[in-house]
Amino acid sequence: MKNYIWILLIVLFSCKKGSVEMESADIGIDPVGNINALNRALQLKGHFEEGTFPTQTVGAPVQIKLVASQDTIEIGNETRAFIPLSIPDQDRRLKLCGMNMKVSGSTGFWSVATVNDSVSSDYFVEVTIPSLIKSGTIRVVFSAKLCFNGQSIVTDTASVVLSIRPSLPCGSEIKGRNGLTIRKFDMGEKKGKVKIGLITYTIGDRLDVKYNGEYVISTCYSPKKGSYPKCNSPAECFPITAQEKRYFYMNYDPAISRFIEVYVLGYCELPDTKWIVDVGCPE
Amino acid sequence: MMHQFRSARWLAVLFFACLIHLCDTQSVQAQYGKKKASGKKKPAGKSAPKTSKPAAKTEAASTPAPSGQAMKFIYGDVFVGPSMNFASGDYIDYQKLYYGTANPNFSITGTFKNQTFFTAGAQARIFPFRKPESALSALSFTAGLSFLQKGFTHDVLLVNKSLDYLDETRLKEEFNASFLASHLMVRYGKRLYAEAGISIDWFLSGVRNQELLRKSSGANAFEGAFETTANVDYNLTTKTMNSQSLSWVFGVGYQITDMFGVRFFNNLNTGFFKDSKLQNYQPSLQVTVSFP
Image 1 (cartoon, rainbow over the protein chains, first blue to last red):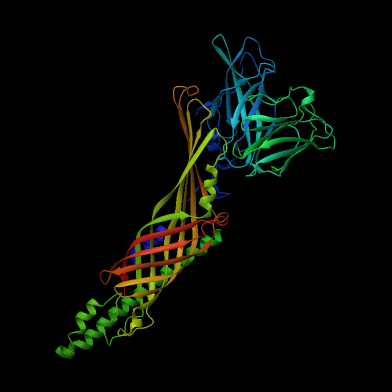
Image 2 (image 1 turned 180 degrees about the horizontal axis):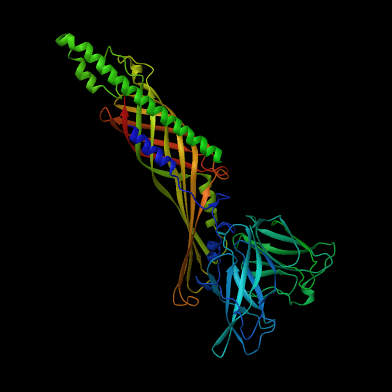
């Protein structure tokens, strides 16, 4: 009898323990607790490699800078962020032959596909944050690989802070300053006309609204499918509203898609811009 | 949390110490009783009634003593067996909302799987009505402690359909928590019995294992196919888990011999998480060993 009881006591006292404390019982990858999984869960066109992140070689013959055109991007789950990068002093003979990307603090890195903007010579990396990733802030680091005559040079690194935010219900308001904000709104079950208000105060900011893969509202000419609101857009794309709210309208049908994506680009040249966007419910 | 953990463990230690003490006391008493009986019976020789001896052999641990003899007041049982945890409730339904993506570029599917564990414990049974001829003699009250585990596995598969090659992200999450259950039950029956009562399940510790598998394949895979994994263990703590929760316990059993029996035991609990309603139904098939 005594033996059985001691066996039970040993079992009772030999409990397994993890290494990180869990904050919430909800499904998903925590940006703090599981950064390695988060790095691997980003949705993009790329190839994942387990090795060390390629950075500029010390003593390289050419020092080339990579610049992130946006320092911070606020992004909602399941929205696609286009991260603009540029190489200001690129020698024309050097061609971009690869872009590397990783979430700061994680292991492994992505070799990612880039989209080249012929007008601005910016490179865009498209990243979608899946709903499996929880809200939080991450820093994404980039380096570019330039090729010429069979040689390759890795640039200095550039980084962007991604602030991952949950989707919002219609009737919500978002506020921001400089940088790019991409938020997803759940418009509910009711079909109807949606009213979207914008205040940009004394420094203009750009607003675009995407619905079912198409831009349906824009303060500028509507970007074509697959293109992006950019800093080098004409000045009229960044309207100044002062204290007056400027309204935009769109038709909404839940049978087509239940969500809209709101893109707000804070004025790129001046650091003190601020704006408010409110998204009404369908009426 | 640590305080909670310690108190549950001390409760276990105290209970098992009492049980060891009881068993020791009873075995000493039994030996003393035997000696006493043999000392008394030997001189009496054949005059002692023969029927009492076989009766004493068969009517032992969990069955009352024969007519005229008072039953023992307390019995001890230990039990062990496999269990299966069935998780359900609002928490599960809420997690399934993640699958309903409105993004046409993704498809998300998921499944919840039940987990198999084992449970073990000990209990003391008290017979307040000790006259074997009384119908109430089959009634006993049970207090005990057991070790049990609860948990489930959640498997989510996300497929990126916007690419011209196969790109899959699989997230597997396994919840596994250990509890010390202190139960109080009413039991009725001799060989065949039924029992029901309540249990307070004290959370001891737990782990949530999260494993991500990402892979791409196909002729068009960007710079070739790849497969990568990431794995992390999270501690489950009283931040998210209830430190103690009430369960309903019920079961039926059969005493095969005086010492060994089997029982089908069930634990129904809705207090796994602190903020989300997760119901765990845990049936277990146990072997019981009884000690007078």
